Amino acid sequence: MTTLTGATLAAAGIDAVALKPTEVDVSQATALDVETLAIDYEGAAHVPETDVIERLASTANVRVTTPVRANGFDPLGDDSGFDTLPADARHVLVAGHSAYLSDDEAARAVAPRLRAAVDDTNNPWVGTEGIERLALAVGGTQYELLSRTTARDVRTLRTAGFDGSIAVYAPLVLSNSEDAMLDAVGDYTARRGPVRNALPDGAPTDSRATGRARDVLKQAIRDYALVGSVETVAERTKRLHDIGVDTIVGYPARGLDPFLL
Image (cartoon, rainbow, N blue to C red; front, side):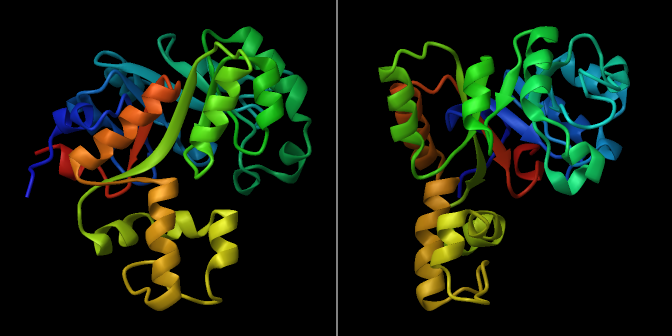
């Protein structure tokens, strides 16, 4: 079995790592051999302390999720949250998931806030999930989720003359164990619309899945995540780079421990 290390990420073609502070100690990411770290916090209460972000920024480029409708990060209202971020931290501008917004925040218009935030920040990434046309209209690096249509979508953008940067986010499982893959990303992929519609009602979405549910999930985890050996993932990321993806952002779905040996 291959021993995973921080350098393994580069070997697999991973350009950046997404960190969820609710799941990992993000300060450990200084040991990872990648150029960019994207801090993907869930709710404003989980934004890492300034000194933690500064330490990360001393070893890599750091980007922080910025939900433009949320208090503290609203470029047309309360933008006090920007003052708590180090000057070196760049941004991933997103509309923000309604689960982490108050009713008032969720009701705010996305388009004018996204445009204002792009104008006010340096070289932002713009999360396209659910707001694809708005994201493309405001510019910035288009930050997309890996899906079964990613290759087609990127080719279409490039053929249409889009010459901006494209980043793609995907959960990452460097293992040949199908059970390990399902335990790590089965639930994630089951939330994607096409997969949810294809799964039998009430079926387990982890390694307990059997029959049709397992067949659906076996394909889905390869559509929506980067899974398999380092070599298998490297082949996939090379294809993505070749068709025009500039940055591949891996989310270590089994945590950082495997890469800190």
